[in-house]
Picture 1: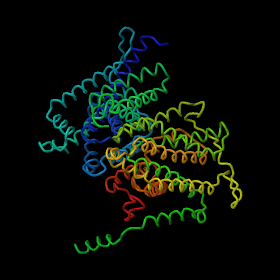
Picture 2 (picture 1 turned 90 degrees about the vertical axis):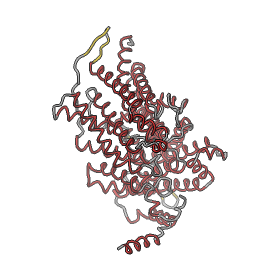
Picture 3 (picture 1 turned 180 degrees about the vertical axis):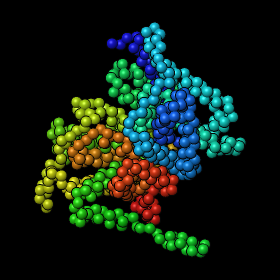
Picture 4 (picture 1 turned 90 degrees about the horizontal axis):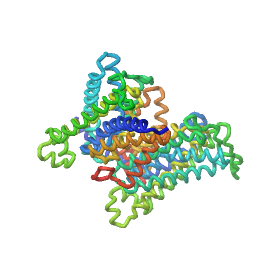
Length: 292
Length: 336
């Protein structure tokens, strides 16, 4: 039965899902915009962020919201460490078009199997940040989902302002536009790269932490997140921050609606087919203008 | 102290490396006579798997290494070949011998379908993600069509190749878990693949491929038909992947979506090609044997096997980005 409430509920669920896609994709688009590289290990930072939250909450008994903050900060530093040790030596070498792709694939295998070894195969569940369900006009929605919407919106807007107004954001945009010119006017490009990479990883950890109570934490959770993140970021146009957010919400909504029309096991196929069709018509993605 | 160091380097400079064409011939002969000396089924199995990966990696090398189209969905063509051939054999009763060819053609057709929308894309990430999405579509579809493919529980009871009557060798049977006939069959497939690739890369087509890799704009301005050559690269590389997949299905006789369509498969193909040397003719072959045999040796590491694998890929890119082959052969290595 397709009823109005069901459609609205699904739309809201799609919005929540879309926020997550946007959070994962915005990290990817950020490093593509500045460093011109694709991070295949992004999903693994997502997974590690989830595990950080799990250990903070269950082992150390830290309240979930504080635990989320700690997980995000720890993942930031892990990202910085990885960028310094593995990505940095590859900069300015020939083959930059492919080498970061491959190196991050290697990292992804490493992290995924390491966490499988350390944390085991068992799915770990994280308690809800907020309990309870709100009901308006017969539409039910868990506080957790509203919390997700709220936090993502605040973080995204905050980040947007940060890029536009802060001095670091200025340097970041200068680097993205014209690297050599940015170096000439005294922007420390390498430092920008490191911080951007860390921020991108932190964003993935945030998404994972928010989602962890709904799904659960496991060594393979990064795979699906990475795939959806890639689709989102290309759909929105690589390098476009606003595009990533809009495409994320669009993709989440499409998926939720397609569950009503088709059955749930086909929802990924629907999303991927739409992705290929859009990319065929508009190779630069929905909102991208740069090279493809 | 410094003089000793210098003379060391001098020694390295006088060492010009091995002539690649002679080495290639020697390896081919060694592979042909290999089963005369080694009949251990386990070792032959490792060799067969290595040869399957050599075909896969060599065909991916054509599209990625020579044409410069970074596809990330090669496992889809392998899987399509495997599933088409085994389903035809099981449901329609078509002989797996034809299945080898039909599986390859089915993969080529699929690559044509995904090649078309990829034509307008140039940057590596766009093509990688588009082909990745395509391979996921194929994987999920295969898992969901439970009536046809039995979904995740997999196909079993795939028929093996019917026996063959050859004038000189008599009757060759593929039944009962024998390894040597399978070894020679995949060796023949491998040699045909390498010869075809050799002729393609050496001809004007190969020249066009490399011109696409180096600069599409320059190639276009010199009247290279980009659409035609890009699709050709897609089709040829997918065809051989499909044939390898078909062989794989009739060799293992069991097939699950996650064994052939998983991203891990693509990662392995990529690691093999890169460790051997992207865009070098022998690279993928060398890489296939090194990694497949290497992974068998790494078995003692147990669960740490894949962790080591990941570290290896990272170290390789950091310290030897051009791959092993270009270190080994100092001549132009058949063709660079």
